[in-house]
Image 1 (cartoon, helix red, strand yellow):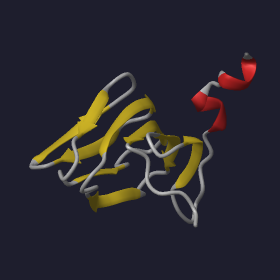
Image 2: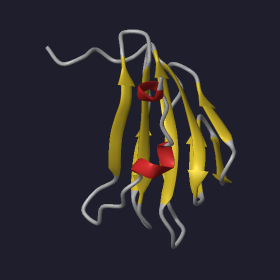
Image 3: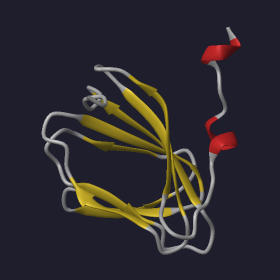
Image 4: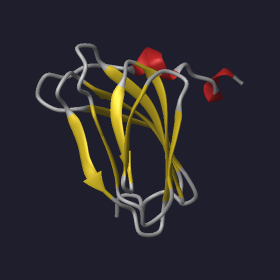
Length: 111
């Protein structure tokens, strides 16, 4: 069943104009995707009222904020952002930052 297998980092791309984002899977229960932030790019502080989220850093380092805590995180670290808690990330390094993003339940699909 190779249609269900993928290597997320093979899909990473860096864009100069804005952060790169791709969705691997989207259902009413789950969204799984990949984000790549170039140096200086960020995902501003935001929250999801009814959705839990986690980031898994694959490559690079970033400053992740969850609630009142901000910490530099690198490959292999899992960052948890429960529903209703502000969170965001900024790439303050010189290399791309790539991370897997999973949100549950998934956001509404296109109407």
